Length: 251
Length: 299
Image 1 (cartoon, one colour):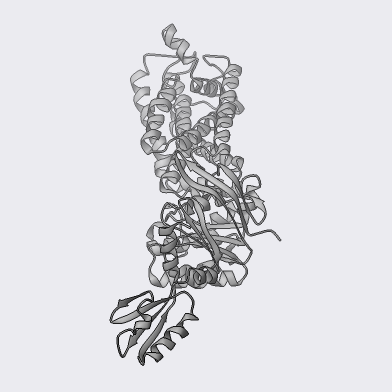
Image 2: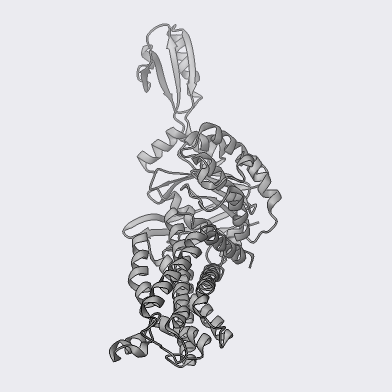
């Protein structure tokens, strides 16, 4: 237990020591999206009844930032440790696979939540209401960060070069998070793209998170919860199995 | 009492390369043990298997009776490894590095021991410095401290003095000797054979993944003994000694002796021939000679 707590603390210290890069920057980026899109689209769309576009946008941006940063936390920490070689200091102690995974996962969730909170606070003046279902908000935020945090651990273990990690991030995570209904309701999409969106787990994260705020969503929140929960479990199981097997960590 | 380290028929392949071929030996508690061999002999692979960083294809390794795979938690608690590569976490200070490392081993409130380690390794005034700001030698010291935070009974140093200045080498050996005297088992790999000769009591030699020697240092030196006697004489070597294996080196005649007892015969023949001995020195074999001979000649 102490080993897990120490690694968790180390991972928290690691991102907090560079919080301009890991927290402030993504919050600012989200604010810029909010300013630009809210201004450009304000008069065009009202997605849900009684919810302005500017307001509709906020939870989506928050969840997009959360998932991207949860992914980045574990993946960048692991690849740095592997490339510099200091991962050896985590492989020599009697940490179990679960200690190792849980520490990286929780740190990723914390970073995701801190970024998400930052985005919500800084964009709230665009009219964000108090959540209709606060527990759903918290649940989707945690599970969404958890799923992408676990995926970050998988990517960090798999990647052997920064370039491979960048490919993972830019060709998988970015499209998944951008094409997930952050900026629009998927009901406004042509049938084909609407159907495709239903295969994107990040769509359910955003949709469920939004439901927590507005009590309105594109899909049934229970279905969303099921998909997000299942994604979290499957990716976590994969990450844990990789760590246990020693894949690309112990030769 | 179980062995400090027991290595039992360990084999490891990387693709077509055989890194370790059925290696077996034990290291007893309290020993100061050297593991020698040229680059690529399999030393680091063996240490990595011991540390759980690499998994063997076959065989078993135990630390203080605990299997390094099945019972890895107990085995790792008892083992401190100083890796060969100079690595560090650039986000942390020296003290943080040691505090975190303690925590990974399940220890809290380890500061008294951390302070002692810092003092013994000459790092006290660097405790708050960021790891990035340290010289290579200082980073190496921190790595030694990291391996010792959990007071392991078995300590493995993989070429700890490679690229390290003389002063650190001296102080490091002083400290490691102290640890050995306090009962810690020490396993050392080094390229500096004089270090192994000076410090270690038993020596294993690896060549291309095979164990080719495993003996007490004194025995190893004795029966690879190429003892020689170098003489400066008043006259050329007498006929009675012409057939003796010899060579000339710096205007001295060097005679090879199978045994030190043969020296008496040599002196007797010189006396008979009326040749006076002006200078005499016995050349003892050192580990380097043995090493070179073993690595060139096989078994």
